[in-house]
Length: 468
Image 1 (spheres, rainbow, N blue to C red):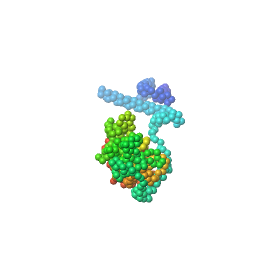
Image 2: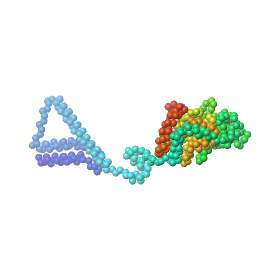
Image 3: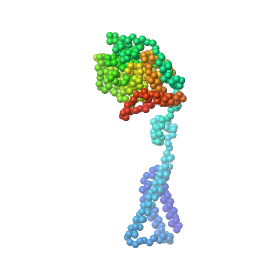
């Protein structure tokens, strides 16, 4: 019995040594599983030898076996099934040990500290975050107060709305502004004017053909500037059939980079430039060809790249023409995104900006008013609605004479300022009031809003995407 006890104890120790996997050596994990399965029968054999050498130990009496080959086959089948279960259990226990050991090893692998990440630079930080499964969330910008000049401007507009509403302010104050002017050339060239009631101021009219006086220097267009603003605008009417050549003479002479055309296309106001790529229009003085066409989104203009080439010259002028035709003379755009898209498109335009509609005093004047106020605010100034209106009116007769266009212009300005403030993480109590103002005004504009394309294939950008 003593020898048997010693052998049994040795067998157990051998089993424990066989099943243990040292945590300090990761290489021991390789090939361990098949080896253990092969060694299992040896432990069973040693136990049978121990029993043979100790005949005194009582053995369990075997159960009475069924006679016949069928009974033996069933017994073998049961024994085989039992052996499979035992092996599966041992294999499962072995795998559990492997997982525990692997977890212990992984927990001891050193990870990179913040100091190490800093040494590797920005690229190292990105790799570390990706490896650890951290999300690449954009850090929240620190909130900053709204610039004082922007805040003061917004509050001045909201005060007008509270005290008398913008509509009454226009009717009681702005509509009465009528600067004096002379219209000598306008009166002498009535055949070149779209309307006999929309005058062209003499003192700031654009002159063409100054080197060839015999051709005449008149075109119904005025140069408009604002104190404190670098940009120059040219407000003009839709060209008549006989003044298209004059229009492109002005464009070429003034070296215009961008034209914004807001007149609705119709028989009264036909298209005066080529609209398909690689086509051209021959005029008395110029050949105007279309080089490129960029299609519109739901709220943006169609963008044409035109080349204005004088006959007999090899050097032409490339011009960008933005055409938006869904803003009628007595309407407002179907969405403020129309205005925000236009403002974004002309933001980086250099040189004089030509803005044209049917008579050059309605939609074109509204866009100039919006862009001028935004430009002054960006320059750090605090413009007043009346001051900018008076400057515009003194340079372009009948400009912004419709209450509807004035109200919508102010509405669009506040929308742009609010969204820009949001994008810059700027805060201010007045911004909440602007949101309420927008909701109220939007309801008022519904009945005058122009329709927008319903084609689902035309992309529809968000308001944030249209603001630059």
